[in-house]
Image (cartoon, rainbow, N blue to C red; front, side, top):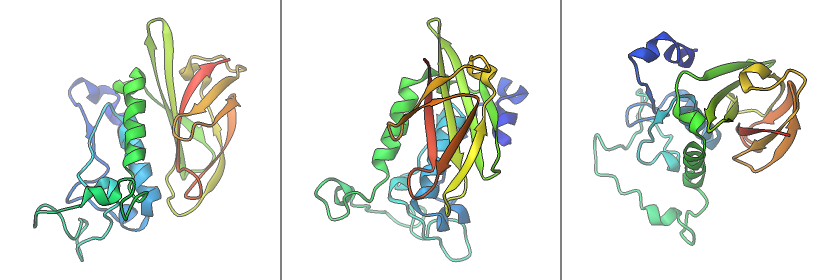
Length: 215
């Protein structure tokens, strides 16, 4: 995986910035994946590396491509774009159609968890379904571990059910230890251990961003 390469030796001279899309990056995954794909790309960009960016209008899921080219059909390269942001605010005609609250939640998670401010602490975990990925970041903060586990369904079209097998040592836990897994996106929490069932997809949320706490 590219992110593991960045987190290894190249981290001595490279400081990556991940952007889920820009004015001239609109791959088929975003053209046809709907809001689920846009949530997934944003969550991964925000948690895999310390620095990420969001192109203007990303929260509006601007997924119509210019024919024959992987870029938005109407973007700032060709026109001054009035997105009428107030239409998407509470009481507006398009209220509830923006991903702005989701992006705000991700940014708050990044502020609250210093482990996401580092590059080299990326650790992958095994998942039975190849369409689902799991990785963690861990950092000592004032004598306590700050640990975030991300589990993402990379298939925006289908809900996936699978088992995630955690490298407990990478989380600072014993192999037989259980812990509280709190999903910082949905607010749900579970008692997890080394092996855990997950269900992710467009009918709920495509990504768990989990804060791990000892019992």
